Every structure is written in structure tokens, then in C-alpha cells.
Picture 1: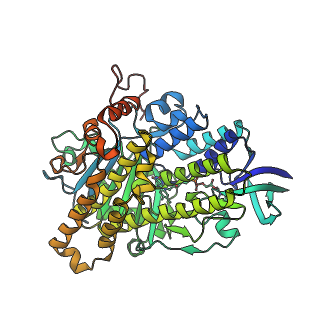
Picture 2: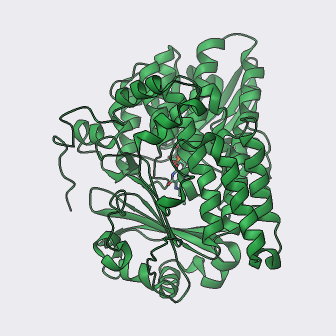
Picture 3: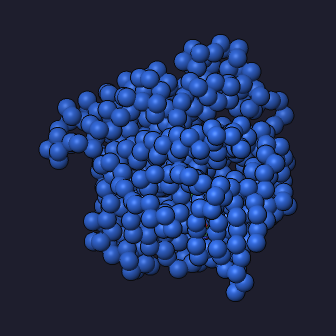
Length: 536
Ligand SMILES: Cc1cc2nc3c(=O)[nH]c(=O)nc-3n(C[C@H](O)[C@H](O)[C@H](O)COP(=O)(O)OP(=O)(O)OC[C@H]3O[C@@H](n4cnc5c(N)ncnc54)[C@H](O)[C@@H]3O)c2cc1C
């Protein structure tokens, strides 16, 4: 019999981080995992907002051992044994089936958006076997009771507590918890146990995924035919690389241990046509249609069996109820596109932490968790609509680029607003409830998803969508995304932030101070000197 304040179900990064924070608030926690660590997990690419959230959780809840994980340089120095990859930005190439990708002077078939100006403060790809294992050990060290190889058989409300009947390696046990937090991923524990019902995202087509880990994947940047003569804003492979084709997209994420994560997400129609359920042969069939990607994988071999995920997206009807709540990653998942999973989940961890900190033991907690659950679903819906719009424009890259900029504008604005101590300016994820931008974001996406095939082919329609998206981002663009001279290559330039100070309701001096504090403007004598090189 175990008695605790919180039972957290699932020890992925979210469950472990949630448990760590819970301990720092002074509550007791039992972390229940059906499997063991280390183990493979998908979902690897972080983003500036995700890392900023890791950093602020670490600062607020006194987690100095977690803080180094928010940046590539500090991570590599503090924990060289925990593998990660260098992510300087988001790289997109648009492919026409059967044809080799060829860069053009106007760069209208590629998009490079830098997320950081230097390696030292860059984002990372999380090698989840190492990363999740590290976090679960940290949670245990902080006093969380960790039960792996545990199957929960029954869940019932008993007075003011929830009772979980479980089995751990043949031993029966009962966990009594004041609150059950579901961190078990999509279609996970509470969804099944409470029969919560699944809803779909508005306008998002049915999608499927196929993925594995590889060795021997070539770097695109070594190919002058792709890069051209000009120097891109960052090495194109030290990024989340997206190969976009009309029905879907491929991700390529390189880790420092020589392993590369790669996979494809595509419409269910396309997945059926290629036969995703066949695994490796389907991957080969896909690459035969995309010669440049095939070149990149010519010397590569998968090191794990391919995973096929039919029904990629998922959304529950309700994310919180009496005695239970779901982290965003258990309540909804849209698509790997734009790496929205981590920031959404971390925003949920942050909200729950505040609620427990301020309202544990009070009557206010239950209605607050219900409201937070609605916000979780609102944020997932915002991401869902944008991803639906992006899927509808995979075959029309200028329109895709214009819509993707909605994401980058909102993400960079949110990051800057938070760093300036003004998170209220950005509001919810993707500035989805920011007056003006939120509505415009929705209008742009609705225009994209509701167009008929004839409209899509009409250049006037395409122009109107692009103009609308350009107008939408202007008031919050602090990343130079509205500058056509950059021809789809967007470095991090501190001047964009200082000249956008008014949009952030700040002075240039305040923005400068923030840039120095966050090392976006380098202090003298930096430049990655002490960072060990990536092997392989
Ligand atoms: C193909 C794909 C690619 C993705 N790529 C990205 C990306 O690049 N960037 C990004 O931000 N997000 C990405 N995501 C989303 C990302 O995977 C999730 O946001 C993230 O993994 C959530 O972490 P988690 O700890 O909540 O869940 P998980 O990592 O899924 O961990 C859940 C844990 O719960 C355990 N569990 C499950 N059921 C039970 C049970 N009944 N009892 C006990 N334990 C249980 C599991 O064993 C597991 O250890 C991707 C998702 C997919 C599907």
C-alpha cells in the first residue's frame, strides 16, 4: 500500500520532469512506468520555446542539474554521457517526386530559419534513451518513488483520493493518490481506463508515420549543388531537416553519437499507396521517389526495426476531471511537424506546477485544473489547425513558407516576450489567443484548408494567402521574417529584436539587456571554446 499526493503515470521525459517539480513543491509522488529504462522513444527535436521552458522550470523550482540541458553547450559540458544533437534551426527542402532537388537563386524551394546564433546556446535533439533515463534517475534522487515494470489494473475514486490497483513483477500493490497525472502519451492510461473518447482535429487529414534510427546518413551540407555558393545562416544539417513532398514530409535529426533519427509523416492515402505497414520496404519505395533524399541515405542502415504509426494524430474530448488530469502529451498529439510536442507538454507541466504550488489542498484546485485542461486542448487545436494548413500546402511551397512563418513569428515573439518578463504579451501557444494575431492565424489557416483544387492552382488565390499571412505576422515579427531580401534564409540577428522593441512593448535598452543576459549577443571571448567536439 502506497499513499502519496500525486501518482504520475508514465516515465517519459514529461512524467519524470513533472515528478521532479512535484518534489520541489514539497509533495510526495509515485512515478509508475509499465516498461523499463533505457528504452527507445520517439519525439526528439526541441525548440527555443521548449528550452526556455526547461530553463524557467529549472530556475523556479531549484533544479540546477536540469538547467544545463536547456542549451547544447552546457549540456555537452555537464553531461557528455547523455547523447544529444545540435539543432541550430529548421531546414526545409521542397521536393518534386522523381526529381533531384536543385537550389535556385531565389531560394523559393527551401526555407532555413535559424533558432540560435551560435552552437553554444543552440537547441538540441534529445536522444531519448539517454535523456529519459537521466531524468527518471533525477526524479528518484529527488525522492520520487519510481515503480517500473508496473501494470495498473484498476482505477477508482475513493473519497478524496484515487485508488490504483497495480501489479509489479507479480506483486499486487495499491497506490492511493490525491491526484493522478497522466503522462503516458497518446491513447494512454486514462484515455483507456476512463473511456474518454477520441476526437479529431478540425481539417487535419488522417496521417500515418514510419520511422527508425539509422547510422551512416550523409550530410547535405557537404553537397555544393544543394548549398550553392553562399554561406547559409547555419550548417544546414545541424538542424531539424525537413524534406517536404506533396503528400507529406521526412525528418532527419542527427545526434552526436553517430545515430540519426529519420522518418516520414504523410497522409493516410499516401501511406496506403506506399504501404507504410510493410516497414523497411516502404521506406525504400519512398526514397525511390525522392532522389536527393535517397542519396542522403545511400550509405545508411537502420539500427532498429521500423515503427509504423497508423492514426498519428489524437485528441481527447476532455483533459481533466475529478482527481485526475492529463499532461498535454497524453491529451493530444498533432504531428511532429514544427516540433510542437515538447513546448506544448512543457507549458502543461508549467501550468500544473503553478496550480499545485498555489492551490494544493484548496477548493480552487479542481476548477483550476479543469480550466487548464481546456487550455491544453485549445493550444493543441491551434497547433492542429496550423499543421492542417501546412499539410494542405505541401505541394505549393511559397504558400507553405508563408504559413510556416506564422509559426516562426509566433514562436520567436513568445520567446522574446517571455525573456523580457512579459509572457502576457504572447498569451497561449502560437500566440493563439493574442488579440489580432490569433484571429488572423485562424483566418489564414482556414483559407488554406478550405480551398478547392482549382483555387489552389490559381496564382491570385496563392498570392492572397501569402499576403494575408505576411500581414498577420508583421505586428509580431521580431525575427526579420517579413524581409523579402533574405530570400528564405533567416539568421538570428540581434538587430531584428532591437528594432522590434516597440512590438514587445519594451525599449531598445531593455531588449539589449535581455540579449546580453541570454547571450544572444555574445559577450567577449565566447565561441564554443570549451565544448567538446561531436564524435562521428
Ligand atoms: C513520430 C513522432 C515524432 C515526434 N517528434 C517530435 C519532435 O521532434 N519534437 C517534439 O517536440 N515532439 C515530437 N513528438 C511528440 C513527442 O513524442 C511527445 O511530445 C513526447 O514524447 C511526450 O513525452 P512523454 O514523456 O509525455 O511521453 P512518452 O515519451 O510517450 O512516454 C510515455 C511513457 O509512459 C509509459 N506508459 C504508457 N502507458 C502506460 C501505462 N498504462 N502505465 C504505465 N506507464 C505507461 C510508456 O512506457 C512511456 O515510457 C513526436 C511524436 C511522434 C509520434
